[in-house]
Amino acid sequence: MLLIQTMKLSSFNFNLPKELLAEYPSENRDEARLMVVHRKTGTIEHKLFKDVIDYFDDGDVFVLNNTKVFPARLYGHKEKTNAKIEVFLLRELNKEQRLWDVLVDPARKIRIGNKLFFDKEEELVAEVIDNTTSRGRTLRFLFDGSYEGFRNKLLELGHTPLPKYISRPVEPEDEERYQTIYAKHEGAVAAPTAGLHFSKQLMKRLEIKGINFAELTLHVGLGTFNPVEVEDLSKHKMDSEEIIIPQEACDKVNKAKEAGKRVCAVGTTVMRAMESSVSSHNTLNPFVGWTNKFIFPPYDFGVANAMITNFHTPKSTLLMMVSAFAGHELIMDAYEEAVKEKYKFFSYGDAMLII
Image 1 (cartoon, rainbow, N blue to C red):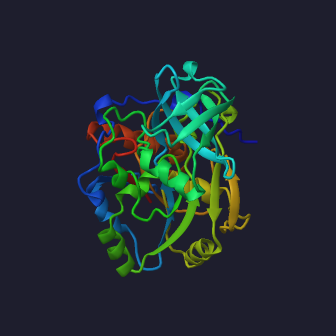
Image 2 (cartoon, rainbow, N blue to C red; image 1 turned 90 degrees about the vertical axis):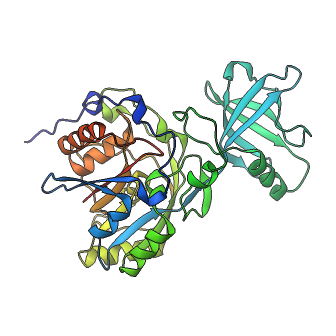
């Protein structure tokens, strides 16, 4: 019997110079750089993102994640002491009671019973009602008005939740650029970054060429940034994220698969959503629920035969998935080349197409 050696965390380490972490996106969405990796031949090409059109034909399908990032970062102060605090909204727990699961910073100063204020008029106030983890809290928002008014207040006071690795302050452009142009359903606290490279013009050109778009929703949680801390990958636990895969998306994907066309997952979130709802016949099933699927090599993919993804950080679960899809050796070679060629990494960075 052939024993397959499970890969270890250390297999996914590489040297990533700090200056290659993208602080800003490319000037135009579709003019980020694109590395094209051919799985069969091991060939690597250097292109621009808009050249992606040359690799697809009539009847191929791009599967998109249409989640929408909400401005999850709030700045406020504690009552009495006026100490400055940051609150990161993770998810709404109860609509009627306005209960939210949040992270707070600095955590040691924020205890049960504390009141937090977010605006000068003190229209938006929150009370800490529970501790969930060292930095996690449950807040009850106190707001005199309708639910709609409350949500509008959050939108008004919230800031774009740029990842922590971006050291600069949020700028007005980030509100637009840290969001895909096809974002529809609010619920993510991090953008599905592979999709950031699609411009209206590029999508129109793809459409004219006969390429179809199927949409699903995976609300990206902060767990996407969680480091893996165990050497044995089978022991790592992923955070759960909510997914919605409609029948319409399944029909488009399954029709393309049946016709022998390319099904391209735009981003690791799409790949994870689809692999969470694949049938034993390798067709995509509709699904509404949560997934904590962790994909690492060796893994047999059931749905997509192409993927677009950004360049990921060392030892990340995202790099592990990409390595499972393209082959570990090929991906590590491609990443070495990316560092040498000074590709930009992470959320605002360049893209890779794996075919």
